[in-house]
Length: 437
Image: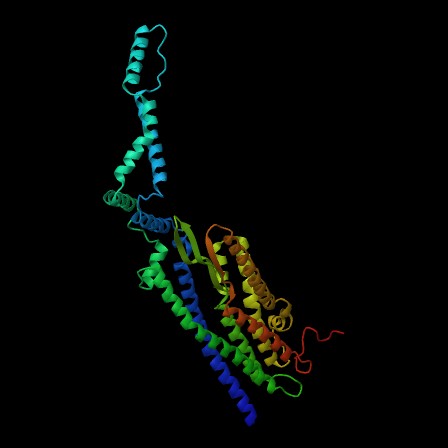
């Protein structure tokens, strides 16, 4: 064995070993990233914020308490209060009149005693109280009441009474949702906001390691394929060792792509500001929707959802994007190591004819188009929120995740592998076609 061959094979072995280590670390880091991002999105979900009636009750109560604390009977508010008091007094007089002078059905015409009694009662009530005169004096009574309430001491009593009523109407204990309570207990947090900030810090700390390992894995893939192509024989074929190395590298990419998220979809309201009684009610970082799944997790969800149609979709995704590409790689390795010797029909099928059955490249394109579609759809739906009386700042967080790039690298590596081994002078004889012609 020549020194150049030893160096080439040693370089491929080292590159494969490093790729396995970096791939495992990348899958582990992305698993943590996915967990932290999912939990952070749940902690900041709008169901616990701007869609929670208890949150609105507390915030509106705070606005009302602020307005009550600054309440004063000044000249600007006096006409409004005087009109409100007058209307209240008139309504009260009308209610008293209705109670004292109820409308009764007339007695039978032949019961003259009942008729006489009713006429006497009606006359007595009308003589005792003149309700029309009382209603006419309602503005004067309202003016006297308002004058009695003026002054610092009376205003302080009014504010204290209103604050007491508001405190009694506002719930002091808010029940924490079960899902939110589990997350707070998991990360040992007292509230959702600091817990979400903690997870955001964890995600930021993980990002450089993920990017570095992803770049290293893709770079090692290039190294393995360059070393394998460098040692081709005169006929342009790969030796068994190089073929095994590139097949192993391609499988590492496939496994990494299957266990890491491919697409992250997030719709978030960065800021919702609504003016209430001159005060701003503000909600920030409200997640409306978040989802990030790997290919195998999507299959798992489809199976758990039940239904023949969903099971069929899960089966097709598994066959065309997992089973067929993996079997094609393994069959290619076995077939070419046979060097023309007879092999089993399934091996020949997957090595020579399964390419048209593999939809890995189609899936990559479909994922990319889904990304574009979700990105446009989420942006369009979030744009409709701006057509409200409130100030709304939205964010479309749809993005391609590292798993997509691993799957794309697998597809490209598979194509390069096919071009390296499909050499007429190197390809073994297809025993199905011997004797044809």
